[in-house]
Amino acid sequence: MKKDFITYQAQTSPHPLAMEVSHAEGSYIYDSNNKAFLDFVAGVSACTLGHKHPKVNTAIKEQVDSYLHVMVYGEYIQKPAVELAKLLASHLPDSLEKTYLVNSGTEAIEGALKLAKRATGRSEMIAAKNAYHGNTMGSMSVMGYEERKQAFRPLLPNVSFIQFNDEKDLEKITNKTACVILETIQGGAGFIEPTNNYLNKVQKRCKEVGAIFILDEIQPGVGRTGKLFGFQNYNCVPDILVTGKGLGGGMPIGAFTASSKLMDLLQDNPKLGHITTFGGHPVIAAAALATLKEVTESYLMAQTLEKEALVRKHLVHPLITEIRGKGLMLAAMTPSAEITNEVVLQAKDAGLILFWLLFEPKAIRITPPLTISNEEIIKGCEIIINILDGIKTN
Image (cartoon, rainbow, N blue to C red; front, side, top):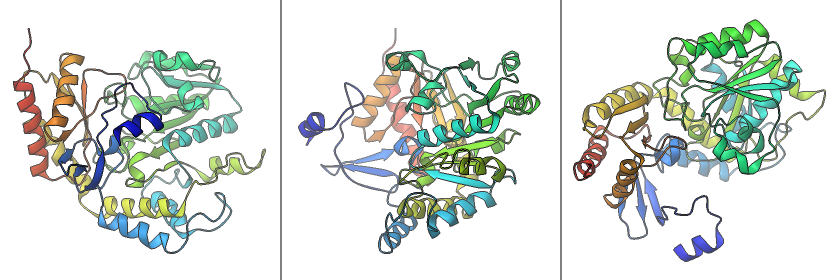
């Protein structure tokens, strides 16, 4: 199977982890030898309720027995998509009332950027250095990391970058700016939180100049930071909210949400301003609806902060310089990329799944399912500490 994997399936790196998956349940993934791996990554923040969650699985199976894809997005009334959009609106500020469902986070970013240009008639887009918003051409254009972009240029023109948390850069947002797009918590950069009311100040500056304020919640969203969406921790409300990953409960989804006034602009001048065949797919919408109901109706969000405290308590070691992030969106920092690599790779041998971040090589990603137990958190932390104890440094 590994030979076929390498031969026939396109790869994203020269050295994939190449674990052959047999099945997954709860906080564990099992390989073809039935070895259990405690999952501290959750499919890169995507499996909000862990693996094989009964409510998500039931919703999928029931929808499969009713109908699959029947029509391109937005033409037919399909109950799972309508109920999902309605439930999202009920948990968001009044200005975030209408949702466009798509297939992935990067597609949702594309839609948000288009909507901002359509709403303002402007072309300038401002993003943050070391930002990551996806890998399609528009999303890559607002990626603040040239090394990942240079091979694919030319990208979209008229994009400039500001330093996240640097208030002096806010003067770069002007009446020529169509939108400012930021991650609520910078993911690939190393789980950098906003400080000193930064996002509120960006929002105010956007209002002053008539720019659209877009927040990318693809990683922080759906309960991972102790609130349903990360921005609810930081005294701000975006004009356009983008989500994905964890909303699908393990199924592929993206969404962007705005006011009716904004979103209705995609209906005309031109008509079909943003279209997608499979967006709002009934099976995926059913899985997302079950996920969102469980997150909002349970104690999972409150427990997320308790579990963060547990990680911080048990992940103390001289080779951990700090733990960044909030809730169960955490990055344990080590003194070097070499140490981080050793930890991630040795953890796999020890039955613990860890992973890297895109642009910060010293970070160890810790983004387990929100359903992970306290005992499983302690077990995973003990594995990490044992590995660090065995690492020799000069």
